[in-house]
Length: 86
Image 1 (cartoon, rainbow, N blue to C red):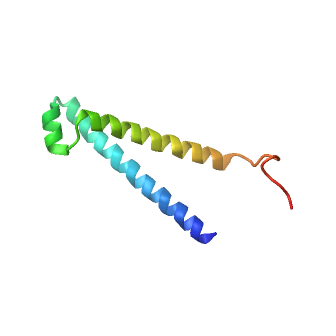
Image 2: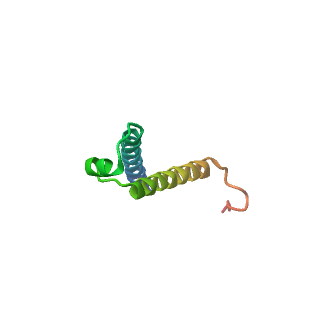
Image 3: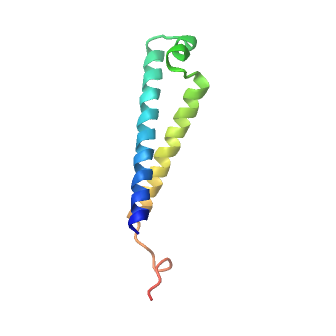
């Protein structure tokens, strides 16, 4: 049981790090776009083009959605159909 909890904690930590990294990179690119940098300049500085930016946004949304679903599932009571008493 403890090993499973450790694995869940590690998974959560890694997910949090990825989420933070994606948010940071997206913010940098969006800031550059807001300051009138063109895509070739953005790519040269960040290695991110417009297609990759959209992929990163979708990935971040997916992670956030999964986190919400997991959090919601943890807060739901176990229904009598799911819970069997021995």
